Length: 273
Image 1 (cartoon, rainbow, N blue to C red):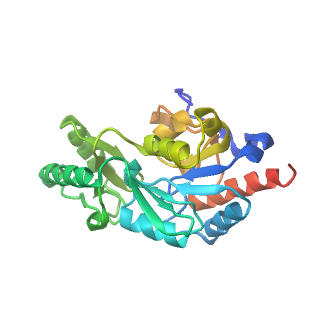
Image 2: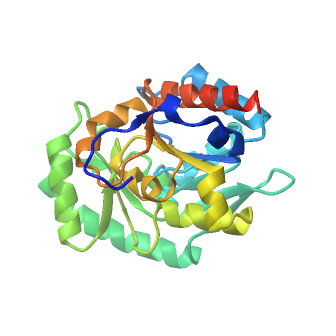
């Protein structure tokens, strides 16, 4: 949806035939699967129910690779696209994890070192901001915390820092908790398309019909722009007025509760297929 209209259709407008054709749900993690920093019981139940009904869920997150490794191992998901599209942590038929980087891992690690040096030269200008506590567990990017452990959220400083990083030519985007700085050439959508095409054999047309994306923040715009079946959880409302690419549908509940609402709607419509 590429429009100045700040509204989205209610989830109940998502037609039964769309629900019946779904094979994949790609989802942001922070404030989309979680809510107020926790994974609700309802979310975990929804993930298990989707998996049991043959719908593969792949979180697509700006979170660190170390955390995403835990998600891939412990939650009922197909795999995790991590660090904003830098790497897909997938599973072998024996359920062992495999890391598939956007490009050569050594090259991406070297690029990360350069990014970290540049970010550290900017951070002193914004005393309330700091490197995310999970920076040591990141393999490709740099994360600046403005709303995860920084309380209250440093939103004005986040906006100013983001502008300063972009002015320096860095590829920086804000999530609901971090500013993520990564090498150019990839994003959430680029890796999602590669995974869906190369790992699962989906054409562009099949992706449009069989894949749904759900998110909560402006850094999900690349996904909202390209997946017609796109859903925002209720807390995305605060961002819609200044987003160029918006979800086509919206839940009534926030975060992981909204994800559970979406799962219930989808599965209820498949029950009568």
